[in-house]
Image (tube, rainbow, N blue to C red; front, side, top):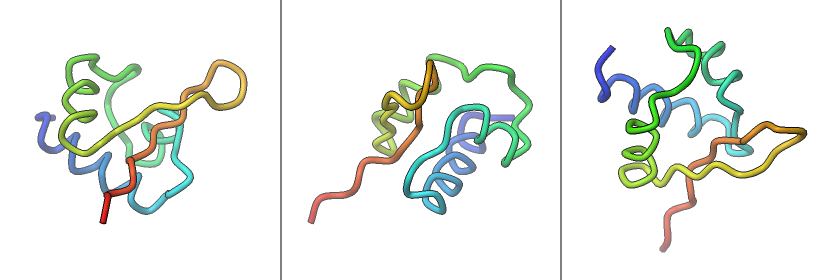
Length: 70
């Protein structure tokens, strides 16, 4: 899988789930082939699509896309 495919899948999934998803939920719902996300890809998502990861229950981080301004 290329980064652009990963980005588009994550963006679409988070667009459908405004409350966000954990990595496990994203991985399972989107059938992603990775146990853990690539740190450099996550950093790119933060810049390109406004990804933010916020504390969820327990140790989980919830992935969300920052709302666009305007």
